[in-house]
Image (tube, rainbow, N blue to C red):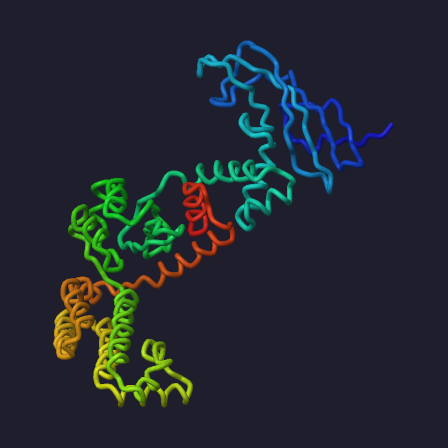
Length: 398
């Protein structure tokens, strides 16, 4: 008689294997499992031993594959009355979760696969329903990242990401020093950021020193109301991006004023004015001809370079003088778009001067946003925003 046994593949002391049957054509194996009566049944909620058995039940659960064979366990279990919980519960066999149709080790395997694969890919790989895979992964994520940790926060970065067409956004808050996503909220309104600050204790709020963001009034309002001592820093990238739109408006207005021969020079010059460095000789000649042709565009081009230079100052005094000089030069153009931008720059100059004390930028957060977009695109979007948020926390966990 053969002494081989499949029991070592099921190292669970509270169960006993009684029978098995294999379907070679279907690549399936069915194994019958019953409780080991040498052990007194315990509650799966509190772990306390039960005095009496209420009834018996049975359930079919999926286990890890054996080679290419799908393994199903036909489990018999006892329902017990737990004196501590004061209710009838399923006994803990250390084999499966009462609310899963898979074993605990298969659930952990699914959670591990979901780190590198999409839910659909995992479901197709294991032959499971995608909702089952998603729910299992979500439960594991909730246990690991469901409770946010706000300890040690000193410098924050705030930005929004688009999640769907129709201006639907999520607000992402990042610990600037560690790169950890701290919190995610729906929309990009003032109350969104206020909700985050309300979650912080008084001591955690007092430890905050600076926050880097773009010039978005709802965020600024929330910061000034909830944590007025925190210094707001405006990033170079967002300010220059807004001025690039101004440059394009100036180019269009000057194009409409130009003669027919001059318009040929304007054509194809949009991105030449926005580039940081023009490397190709043909483009350099084109840019030089345009700047020589139109004084307004030449001045705007100089303003773009001077605007970037303001963020290089380490002294608030010299940075303030640079802002004033830039604004006076911009007003000399008497262009409506440039004047409007100048007023905005003066209104938010405090955030530019704070860069001297806290040389922060949102390039780290922009990289985070790009990675979040990859997660969203890889899954073809998320209907469950809570699950999406948990996947983001997992991707940027330290």
